[in-house]
Image (cartoon, rainbow, N blue to C red):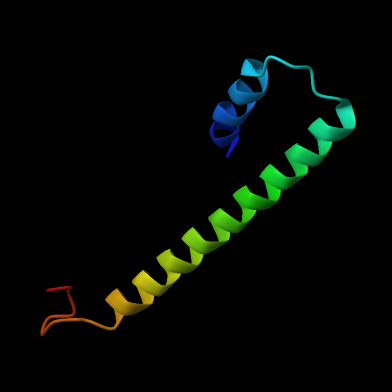
Length: 64
């Protein structure tokens, strides 16, 4: 999950104006919440895909 922060950190460094610590802390908390939500959605999609695929077995118990 660390690689997902790379672009975010780069964008902070690219700003021309300095950001106060409290603003930076708030932005990091928002970004962390966004990343967690994204990971939860991806995890749920994978679980649903697995459940769908496990129900579709062929004659010999393998996926067709």
